[in-house]
Length: 248
Image (cartoon, rainbow, N blue to C red; front, top):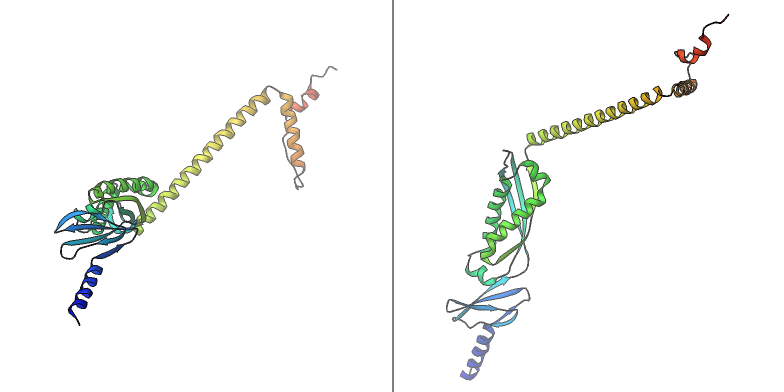
């Protein structure tokens, strides 16, 4: 092969070796002789061999599953909690220079933060105020990862696993709470009924004729019952006109 052709082939290979193509969601962190010299992309990027190096960084949202953590809540309840973290890299330079592995570092911080935040709350808060805990987790994680060029957008607690003994205790507590509410509602109903009876008695006391009408209405209701014998008291107020003093 002539020397000119060999040189041309070597030149073409060298040119193609300097080309890098970055997608729209990628950025290249450039280092020239070991020093940070900027961020390139997207599109075609020239990287001179030996002199320059480029590290690709993905800017898309990353979903990180936080494994289950053994946590003891503030009221001494042992639970296992896992979560999911949504984050993305907003500063590729910091993500490469400030931390060796941004993903592993974020995962470790998420695990320790999950244990810390859940341990500061009681079991009832973990079950009923999960949205508030999610907000606290997101805020703390975002503060810890800001120096790495990472933005944590959302943190969601997924599952809360309890011991069988704790599940039974919570079931008994819920049953006792339902029983308490039922008794309170029943007592309130009795109190309202008694109040209504007192008011009705006061109204009938001021109108004796109304009492007689009520008595007759009761007799009419009893007459519809399928019974052969009906025993009822006869108020003296109904026969007083017939028991007056005899004139003769």
